[in-house]
Every structure is written in C-alpha cells, then in structure tokens.
Image (cartoon, rainbow, N blue to C red; front, side, top):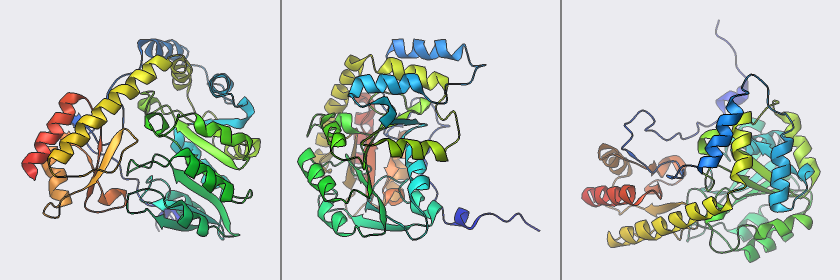
Amino acid sequence: MAIEFSERVGRLPDYPVAGGYSLPDDVAMLASNESPWPPAPAVLEAAARAAASANRYPDPSNFALREALARRYGVPANRIAVGNGSVDLLMAAGEALLEPGAEIVYAWPAFSVYPHLPAASGATAVAVPLDARHRHDLDAMASEITVATRLVIVCNPNNPTSTALGLEEITAFVEKVPPSVCIILDEAYCEFNLLDDPDASIDLLERHPNLVLLRTFSKAYGLAALRVGYALCGGEPFVRAVHAVRQPFVVNAVATAAAIEALKHSDAVAERVEKTVMARVELDEGLRALGIEPAESQANFCWFDLPDCAEEDAVVAGLRERGVLVRAGRALGREGALRVTYGTTEHNQRFLRALGELL
C-alpha cells in the first residue's frame, strides 16, 4: 500500500524554477532577476566572520537584524518580521491568514508564488487580470473584495511584467480596503522604481495597521543566495502571526550578518541601481530596434510579447543554445511573452544578438 499524502499536496502548483544552474560560467544568466554585480567586500567579510561560529544556532528572534532595519526605516523593531527570503514571509502570511471559506485577491500575471497560498490553505483565489499596459487594475481589484476577503496582494513593481504604479494610486487603493483585510504591498523591486522614492510608501504604515510592506535583500542588495527578506508592518499582530506558524531559526547567522552589514552600504546599493537603470535603457532600446516594444519597466527586468511569427518555446530554446537564459512567459502566466533580467553590457548585447538571429 502506498503512502497517503494530504489532499492539499495535489493542489500545490510547481514553482517555475529557472534552468541553467549546471551550465558553464559564461552563460548569460538573465532568467532569475538576480543582480549581476556581487555584494560589497565588507558584506562578504561579515558573512565570513559569522561562518566561523557555524557551530552555534542563530538568534531565533533575529533581534540584531530587526534593530538594524528599524534604524534604517524608522519602523519599530516589534513591527518588523524577517524571513528566509520574502517568499518565506508570503507563505507564512498565507498560513496565518487563509483557510477554507476565505478569499485572497491578487493580480495576474504576478509573482508565481501567489497561487501557492490559496492552494495550500484551501482558500479561494480571486485573480484579477492586469490592464492593457500590464499594470495592476486597482479599481477592479477593489471591486472584488468581499466579507470573505482576508488578504490582498499588490506587487509593485510587478513581477513578471516589470510595471509599477505611483504612490498616489497605491495610497488611494489602500484607503479603500477595509481595515479587517490584510494588504501586502510586495515591493521586492522597489529600489529600481523611479516613479517615487523607494521609502515613500513607509509613511502609509502609521495610518494603516493592516498594511505590510514586503521587501528583500535578494535584488538591489545582491544577496539572492543568502535568502533574507523582511516585512515592515503597520501593526504588530502580523509579526506575531507569521512567527507563530513558522519553524524557528528561519534566517541563518551568515545571512543575518551579511544583511546587517549591507544596510551600512547604501552607496553600493545606489551604484547597483544606477547600473541597472543604465542596463534597462540599453536593453529596452535594443528591443525597440528589433521592432519589439517592452512594457514600461520600473524593475531590474523587462517583459515583452514576442512577434506573432515567433514561437515561445523555440525562441527560449534558441537563446539557450546561444548561451542566454531567460524566462518563458507561459510559466509566468502569459504565453507568448518573455521576461529578461537586465545584466551586464556584455550579456545584454549577447541576448540582443541572439534574439535578432532567432527573429
């Protein structure tokens, strides 16, 4: 007789993992929205020092990191949660908030993890289509909120479409949502968003205890491999709830040390963002030269529809053969599109040459 698993295991969708981890180092890795530039040397040194005490457990309360984040953002440490990447906090939010009979509202296409939350909890997913410009339709999302809604997620800038909404529109939406509904504003790419100051949304927390700003060290801080995310919260109950449903020691000591040190190097983050914006201009202009109009990106990646004559699988395979890895739109919620991370000039040009050959 075979092992019998929980019914919810069959509901869980597979996370669309990028390929290429076994390929040579000279491959253009433009599939996972990572930074092509490494952390500051002082960050690597802090991580190495922490590794020397690997025989000891890390602080389960993550006190030092939460205090460092509190100093950086002016949000009390008791209203900050940290996790093994922002995904960890998302999954914990789903576990803490959702159950059969509850509803979760999010836009689609958006971050691939969002469908996992209703699938794991048995809640009902309400996926609202993006508008014609690949942006969140906040009015449509607001109209879908009911007495059963427990959680609303807005991804800004949106993954995979790279688009963003201004703070004025976000503020108007947050004010429409009932205070009994948790709002997660997923800002994993906010440092690359030039529409507003990346910290502008923090002022909303004091007026909205049901608001959570979800951020990460994986992108602009260049620490994707270490997996550190954090939530800046309007109220302490969210922090207590996600802490209650997770295992202890969610962020390891090496990652914690690197993140604390990284917060001291805002100049390195600014430089990484500046390089990314330059790459954004370079690659998007190259796409337009090929007759392709990308979405208006405010992230470290672009999103565009392939020409009608191009078949998605064939283009992705052809790029891979030419040493370029990108993400296929089908796996991210829209067939016939590609998501491409902005890389170094060399890798961006390799991608543009390869795509030109294929088209």
